Image (cartoon, rainbow over all chains, first blue to last red):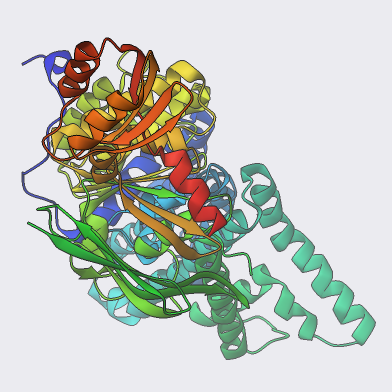
Length: 285
Length: 325
């Protein structure tokens, strides 16, 4: 029967399982995100460097081709520093992608008072946060640890079992460093957008947290003649953890373990702020 | 079948109302209190509501929306408990939410979404499979009268259209209870009429029970068969409008010409109570006495009846009495 001929009737069919409903938010949010051409273009650009790395790995194992080019065979070295650089570049792209995509996930719901509509259904706040954060988590995974592991597998297949066995820890470092960066970026973006409820301001705040955080850290270091100011510099903390995970020699003002704890504290603060703001109605006491 | 409703205010005062309703209890409140900081918003509410369509009335700040939000689990109760369809609001809030469709008072939408996508998403969040949610989103939007505008972004909708979209998302999953918080807020008279007509249609469809929260007496009077009046977080009055209407039909007001003591006496002989002022008579009709009997007596005594109407104790009277109490 044609739709316009039907009248309202109750629903008596089967329902989807409760655990699957947070994916509804994921699907709709992702679809909305990719309506933007800029977002699509930025997402494509994020794959340029992995493709370049893939070419470098191939070149590193094509001795005859390098000889034809007159390049010494040892000039391209695929080691922990190579993957650290990959992670650093992709980390920057992950940040840019989050700055663009993250604030638009929650702030429109808060600005338009849509939260009661979500939470009057069998759908919890945890489901909501999980559904929204999974958009960023999957998006950022697609440009960080997933291509990172593809590069690792490519290198492993070309270099042989010996190299793979000796460098297996790099795969773990790729996944762990990506997870930590994704968690901090996602939670920071969502907490800020929940706090200010305005997409553009939330995006600007995210940039401010990263850049002004670094400046603030330097100011504290200079005034108090200490290195503790770096605890306010999220990017520095993350860099310290990555250095530790990829075993890259570098001097750190803060030990890796402390940097790791500081990042986890940031995550907890963001999660707390998020759960405080993501409510059907704010209670005015 | 006769059931009993107990209503109590914070003072512990209890009043009993006899209701004739075969429906199971929809909402049961047992000393329910809600406190925000030091402010007590709801104070020891006790009631059992069984109507098909229940109106929550009260002046602004009486606690109507807080009661609804507490029933939906948005606010925690500070004392007492409440049940919706027998489910406890503390323990079974997910089950309750699965049975409820809620239309909030304030603007609630996602601006960069078409109405169809919005209602479909809300259907899917309620557990409908995607294809069924899409089909029912179209149906719901046709039903509320947004068929032509269903592909437009919600941000471009007028206030009245947003209200209708909110109603569509509330009914898309076929809830057993529809909670409407000020559904006619900000609507022009024709849009209000349309909304009221739709609420009545839903009520008469008997698939859903309705809780309508409003401070507009007409809205509640037009759509509800039971009314709970709140005042400063307490229950000020509870009344079954259907019963009131039926009871009030027995009050008759006459404007006559040529009436004398004989006419009044004849009416009183039928068992009716009469009060006469100048050419007006007020009477309570006795059981078995119909208006045609009054006409007959008037014709026999050549009394002309110029006007006859049933004096109704309107909801406004009930409300004002409750506010004065």
